[in-house]
Length: 273
Image 1 (cartoon, rainbow, N blue to C red):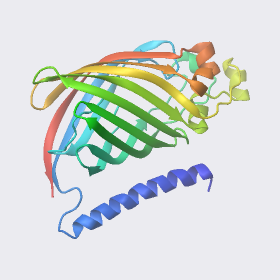
Image 2 (cartoon, rainbow, N blue to C red; image 1 turned 30 degrees about the vertical axis):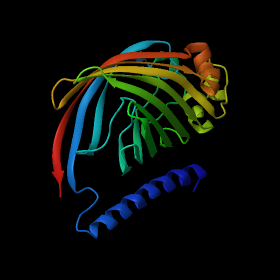
Image 3 (cartoon, one colour; image 1 turned 180 degrees about the vertical axis):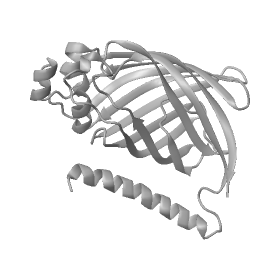
């Protein structure tokens, strides 16, 4: 088995072990870790942004939003950048657990500027997250995820968000973002092999690991009803390091990535025995 496959398998097994231990521990008390009151938030977001990471052409896009958690959870703040997660540790000012991300296929159908490049396959990322509230108005969150199928790299995202309630149902938030990754991630998204260079016209490029991007985001969130939440948001990031040095970006894209959009989420409450 390859080192890449072993890493992905080990991560998946680790998550499985954690789930199993949590279930077994609570089953001794007559309850499972999933027992209790839960909420499921389902919605969608529409935004104007780059057709692909590193691209210069923009396109209006839509995507589903899903959030799952326990009723009465101590989550004080959430962002559209948060990937679906489940917290095994929830102490109010500190939360940690598992996180995942779905990755859609990226190929020449995404943009004509990707013709001749190997596609990024449909897949996902799996890992862990932790977030801390140093104050009542600031959240710092970090995610570390291992690519599965789409790429074989590790990617780390860190974000800090300050937030303030300007009324009973309107919240304003903003803060910086940073992302870094290993060479396997950059190779999938920004690398250009000799054969790809011949077919695409881009210069050959073999990336290393390092900083991926820095940027900032802001949002205005309106709690329209007890169960309906809407938001307007804007995000900017500037590609750095191996991403910025890629011929895909230099010769056919842009380091500056900006998007703006709207989202809506509806909450469903339910109980599991």
